Image (tube, rainbow, N blue to C red):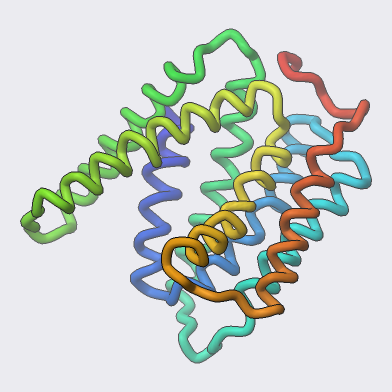
Length: 227
């Protein structure tokens, strides 16, 4: 239940609120701190100690994310927006730690974990939305997009995420998740014709190399199933 509240209700809900208060770039900048926070929480709460090369990968990936989304116009910032974006980042980090703690036991089906967490989180988020949002009319196209997002981008994706957390540490999973920046940029170039600056290309390379470094295993890491 707590995983669903953190991952679906708080993280996703605060993301939408943050994007209504801030442009996308500063929101993404705040989210680049997710992996460093997960790294520190993983040591403190899960006793998962990344190797030195993995720490280097975490810092390199975070620096790449920061470089990709800067510079931006500071005049577009608002304190409430930054606070909500920070809440979103902390909720994502907390969900990564809690998800790893649950899944590394390896005695629970990832699909069952997804079903329970999604059920609790989505019902709470739906209740908040129904209480605060105005009435809306959906076209067939919008309904199809919503069904796709629910089935593929959410249910299927988070089942895979829970499955990977059986063997990957919280920080390894978090860094892999951060490579979405690279994937989205490539897909935008392929299907939308959106180009990349040299700065963004270098930043993407930093993030990709950082992700590879973090996947280098450490003998000092707590094995799955312990703790």
